[in-house]
Length: 310
Length: 270
Image (cartoon, rainbow over all chains, first blue to last red; front, side, top):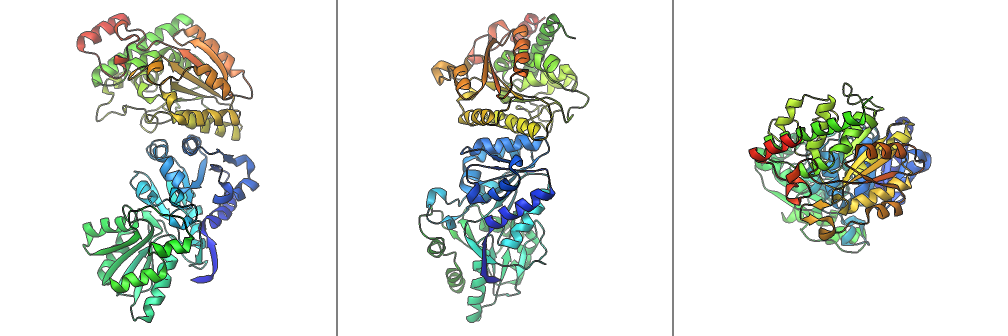
């Protein structure tokens, strides 16, 4: 992990989307007046005729994307996660998922790491809402390299995808040669004292926690679950068998998110205690992103602390 | 070429199909299906460039029935137009049927968009119209809205966008039958004046009698030649049109006829 080089996954998204646009003419992009923040403005600059600003009207944007998908276009739709998964939930459900249309929802500014804007803009329920929709695949990428891979990979799938992206710049974890596969989580380390399952922004924090714990003689592994649906049951079961304790950590409500998805696998396949670290069923608040991560216990130091206590 | 008389007879036959479907299902929405039957007749038998043998023909005209609860009207029209067998109408809403309560584009040939949750269809129609322009295709997109449906805010988001993107390949038809489930539009949530609203959003607007075949044909002709903006046809209709005891009764929005009522309705539609 390169902690010197920090890139926000929304930046990786914007840049890679523009590159993909050059290669694939079917890609069209819709945004709801946030293109400078979601970084779809990079695509818009290169391909103005394939970029559609739908204004501050997310519901219309989702159903419009669905209509375009029926005509063979591949719409990438972006806005903040709270407006995508929350405000336009029924449009995603009925216009996109039920007819199984080829729309890629790339939602940025997920989680409390949105920071200063506060609770109204900090989406902590989106994984929960999106993974309960039939036909939907749910992804949450952890670094620049993985995000760039995901942007390209989801274009190859015929059907809806929700990709959760982050505002905050975070370390580059992987090198260019890393292989990824949708539905296959990535195990980092062989530690058997504990497994830390993480997704998105919390993967790099979990990796830092892993290093901190090493100093205390605790050897953990980190599992980067970039695809939350379909989830990698096999690796979850393997880690449950191979490690003494299980933890999940997410910038999301502990209800319905990554921890819940893992718990569902464990209860059916390999019953074992799982400690879920995340936003404890409460709304977020204003503050700096790193302050909020600390406040909610999802930064490296607090993750390490919870694991030592646990 | 279909004569006006032919089209009137087709509309009658489509109305019979609606009554049969709803009767056999013992559920469904006859009122709003009957009100929109003449409009669907003209669209599928005269106006739209379609091919029942090739339902996914890329350059076909498209229809989004945004008021998806009028599914029986769309199914009856599609069956009569040859997309599938008439007999299938009697399976409407059954557990093993393709004819879902609300239209499912993946199950029924000829259904261009899945609808049912009100207010979403115009946005999808916009998407199709935008796509046509992007790819220099000359197909047209039709979208039927209910007059109660336009109480949904998303309709106006979509109306704004249709005018903004100058979607002159889009034609909206508001089935203005004046009734919604809880009563008269003006009593429940007044969406009038509908014409003025669409006009102020940037549409070319026409007011017609939506149960008059000739007026419907003429309106579509005019709409085809409007450039630079979308068209909205406010079609004044009668809910339950064609079946005397269902006409102008909100109570027939969402219930099936008894055997006696079924027989009377079919007799009236001979």
